[in-house]
Picture 1 (cartoon, rainbow, N blue to C red):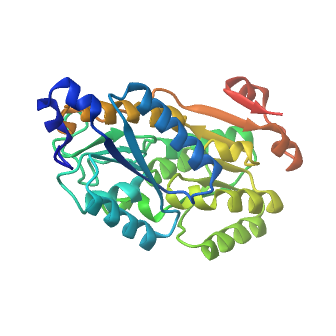
Picture 2 (picture 1 turned 45 degrees about the vertical axis):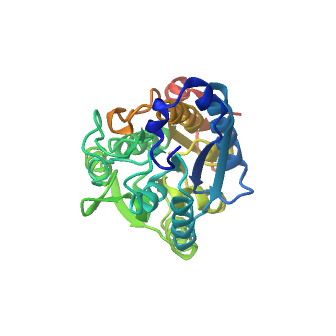
Length: 320
């Protein structure tokens, strides 16, 4: 067995493949005690082992929001030469892909991989990288439209971006956000936050302004600091929309985005296919099948917002 070239397993007899111990590495943007990260990794393990031939050894690594630590872990994973590396979100994919062109990589959550120069096309990636996107650029406008529908009087909205969303000299979601803001007569602001101090400044400014809302774009940074943002939004009575659904359950006003656990399970299928002999260059990159709107009615009441019945009727889930 040649580490880093799992499609060559196809040349082994079936019995030999069944007895082989397979090593798959996974790099996550969570701390190792994060409940969401553990739930997603468990979903990945279950889906992969349900399909696997023979014994599967899965090495989960937890990079958190520390970029330097995450890059060091990525280098360690590549040196270990697993048969496939799974990455979650943009920053993790970039860190690993910069270090290897031989080990297949299956990602979840890297937005615009073509624009980032990571793959040749969505239909035929053409190299060692394939996977599943979670978000699309048009969501910048959809998040704003949902916030305006929830709070019709809102006048100013800040789009909080992650440093990892920079693509082709701009930022994902920004153009759609600005276009929607102009159409809705909302004053837009775009802020790229890279530290906890950045968050504190943004949230303090929104609380001072009044009549202002927040959209938190997805990424490693917002995964790590989402709870802090939810708490500051609550104390400042700031209506906040997240892409990441768990923060709507934890107290944000709303979320609109895909189910990451479903994407992780779909990625496990690709990992299994590569281990069985498929070439990642020919596996198309796939988008989410569905986006869910979650509205936290408890938060709306505590912040003094009366959510229109039409929006509640559209919601996939309502937190009472």
